[in-house]
Length: 111
Image 1 (cartoon, rainbow, N blue to C red):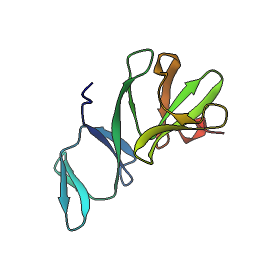
Image 2: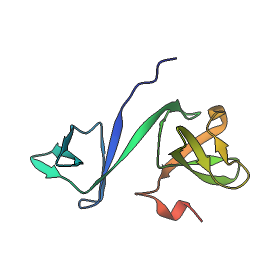
Image 3: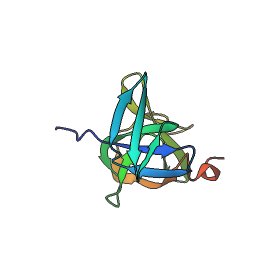
Image 4: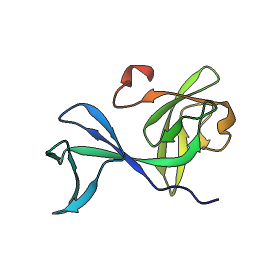
């Protein structure tokens, strides 16, 4: 299975998520040129290649619901994982996962 490589970017300055931003690496950091603005204070999230049970793309930094638990999707040790309690581990059984937000726009979803 080939995974599509794509990103989204959270702009700390504008407090908004930009899907598939035009990325450029300059002077040691990633920047995007978006709506006639150069944004340097951004956080990139990579697409996991997986969809939740409703067909929504899952990215690093997303908050997903597994059972009754809200869990953060993260990339660490070379793989996408779930950070939580009962469901910690490698992200694999996504037929039961529902994306409910992300840590930048919806931090209140994590208790």
